[in-house]
Image 1 (cartoon, helix red, strand yellow):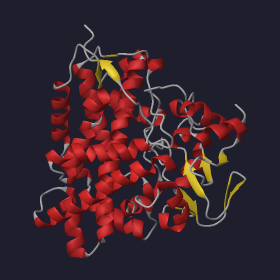
Image 2 (tube, helix red, strand yellow):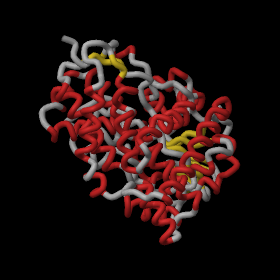
Image 3 (cartoon, helix red, strand yellow):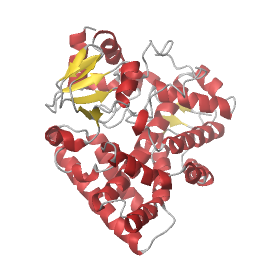
Amino acid sequence: MSPEAAAAAASSCSREFRADPHPVYAALRESAPVCPMSPPHGVETYLITRYDDARAALADPRLSKDMYGALDAYHRIFGDSSIALDDNMLFSDPPKHTRLRRIVGSTFTPKRVESLRARVQEITDELLDACPTTEPVNLLPEFCFPLPLQVICELLGVPEHERKQAQEWSATVAQTGFGPEARAKLEIAEGNLRDYLIDLCARKRDEPDAGLLSALVRAQDEEGALTDHELVSTAWVLLFAGHKSTAYQIGNAVYHLLSRPDQKELALRDARAMNAAIEEIFRFETSVENSTFRHAKEDVVIRDTLIPKGSLVQISITGANRDPEMFTAPNELDVRRPNVQATHLAFGYGPHYCIGAPLARLEMQLALGTLFARHPRMTLAVAPEEARWMTVPFPAFRGLAELPVVLDPS
């Protein structure tokens, strides 16, 4: 594939590219590792695809996450509705990012995450109990999504009878994409979520509980540490990012292990082997294909390419995680690959390293360990090559559109 063809494919976000972006990223790594693009949203961007460049860019203070520094471009891509929901640590630079991450980190602790282990296991068992075993079942809506959604809702303190509606609004945001045609749907869903979270925060102030959202409300009231916008936006990013990425990642893992019986057998030897397999799958098919947008605060040169001040930059996590200069035979799933947890970029790198990584790992370990222990003969209900991947332009995530399996083919 020529560099021009690869750049055009990545820019157009065609259905073919969305179904399998890996050949395009491989071509870009080779011929245009810092690639200027003109996507359908009409905003010029630069896409970084090599591992060393991506790792450095993720921690480069010259590439800002503060959306207000590129507000015109942000408006053109996302419209007006997203701004109120993006006033959080994901879209900020120090010192604001440092302050917001400290507040969330003081409540979203490894100890709090570990305390959820028994409940995550209970939810996992309940969901699998409800799945039919001898006929095809789509695991995405029946298992992969409700598991992390219920967990993050319990962590935040979202009432059980309100979770389905929150999931539907979040799904609209995740699957609609960011093009002009999708903006109306996006604005409605984001507006509904914003109004709901404002109301939920008010209720937590009146009737606090042991959940994370109540802890954030207390931090606002006692320390003045969060503005009203920051409180609602932080609740939003924890709810949305806290379950969507894990849901698609569970689906990706099940699909790839069922497609490769030899790798599945190695992964199922014991808990340690499964944990190693999970890290390799994070590398091989991460659900977070690209980083969220950054913009250049000054002229930046990366690998002899000038990124002019004010330009938008995206970092291809998927492209970096399959860079042959970093990983031997990167297009092969190797669950015994050494040192992969310390090197893959699925959770980012630097100051914006994913604060929810411990929870995602816990959910993946319990979900996959329990699923394969209970249904060791589980099979895909379609041929691996017939699996359908999300093909909406500019989705927030890389994942399957459906995951039909038969849990007990006997």
